[in-house]
Image (cartoon, rainbow over all chains, first blue to last red; front, side, top):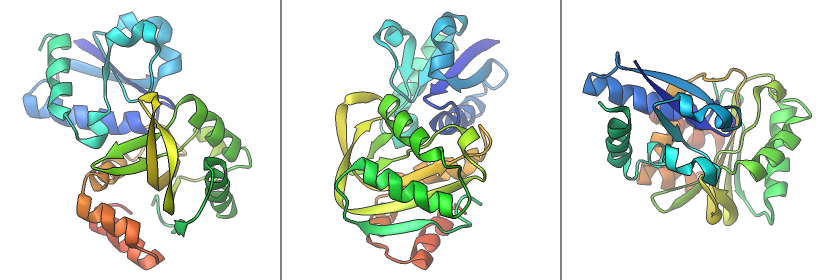
Length: 94
Length: 151
């Protein structure tokens, strides 16, 4: 089971939307049993970011972890959403 | 349920984000949906984690804060006559001219994914976004939302 973390600033608004979108996609692609999604606020996760196989953020992330994080804005504005899924697929090895 | 108090304010002419937050937070407070500390929570969080979202040529903002400052889940809407700059939620150096604001008060974390999803789907709908900018009555506003599966 791969571990996917989805974070935003508060851990309950925009990340909720992102979780819903990604869950839909996982089901559609038939991966729903391969990935477990964790939802949180960015500040709580900075020290354990390496515990996850992939991370999506809908908020600002520090430069130190930027290369580990997929920018999740397309999940909210719909622009370039397929790129997010492609990157996610690659990072999770699906 | 997010809009059952029908908290909406149309075509405001404001100078600053702080004015905007004050008016919207007061509206939430009067309706009993949030605590006194909600305003500070909103302004502080916006500085650290901005909420500007640019979709299809329109600037939106989704200011919100911790659920401890909330009594009852609700969303307050405001449209602006002249845009006010917000920082982009993923890049503080990127400024977004915001015209439509949805201030969120959420009592439970992770609740109502469907409603929030429908809300961002509405943002992506150019026609409905234009309707939101133009509308000036509660009834019109609720009609636009209900047609998008938002209550």
